[in-house]
Length: 167
Image (tube, rainbow, N blue to C red; front, side):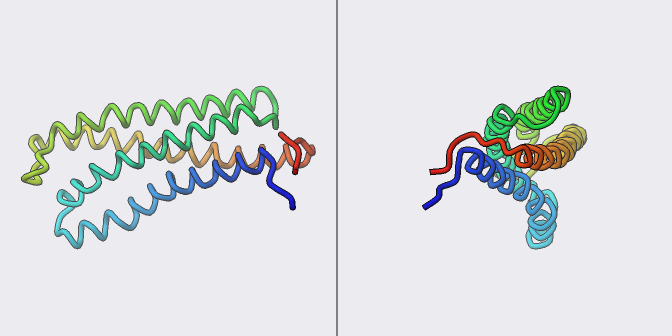
């Protein structure tokens, strides 16, 4: 019986981590938020659910980025300039996650969950706009790095490189 080598296991784990993180983000933003807003009767009430969900999305992002670092460190495809650029995009994704984790408690301070109230709408709107800009940049970075990752994997596979033996 053949078992996957380290390369296959690493790639499989990375893909599933990305599916959970970015797929969860896209599904939540494009399906759950509009439906939740309609069912609950307001975007504000839906926002109190989103407030909790984003903590899990950020945690999923941290896990995915850790696995992505493993893949980047193990990968040898492409030029050294290409590897540096992939690491730079990854670092930007880490930075975006740090910024989101920093903004989240600031947004929470402007909310009163027990009353589903926003304490300072103007301040909340401004901070929330920043949060949305950062998360949009993060999504674009994930798209770019994923495309580059697939291209790198293809080049590695074409060169016949393997991390370990197949048992």
